Image (tube, rainbow, N blue to C red):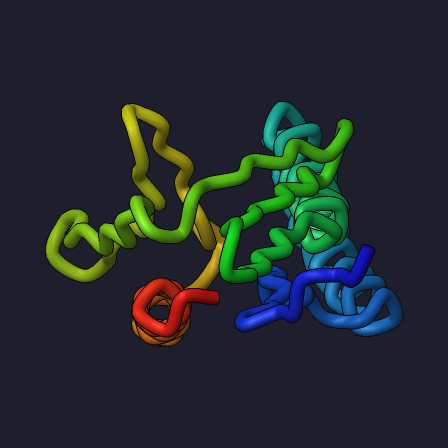
Length: 165
């Protein structure tokens, strides 16, 4: 059986963090400044401040680690004449795939707060948020490209029905 031709095929990924070497250099610089300040506080008799200076570095290291982990998530959006498929691969855990009929799916880009937006695919009571990790302008561009591809898929279905194929 022939495979249905792809009308749209995109993999969405978050912006990657800096490389590991740069993150280690930043962490080492912050740690050295914190050690210097902690020593100055200890020498002035304010030793209870020192553990909090170490906590600062530990939280920064945790944030760097989480950003590296979160950068592994992705969403694969494919469109054929018969199905719009969204495979969401979280940073941790197993992938989840949702399929929609392209004729009925609605691309809904909603303004959120004053400076952002959210993108949902909606069909027959099912909703899925797509591209939550993207910048608002990138999410809007993706929504416009997906709307165009869906329009093309719908018009292809209509012209195929009119031609009797």
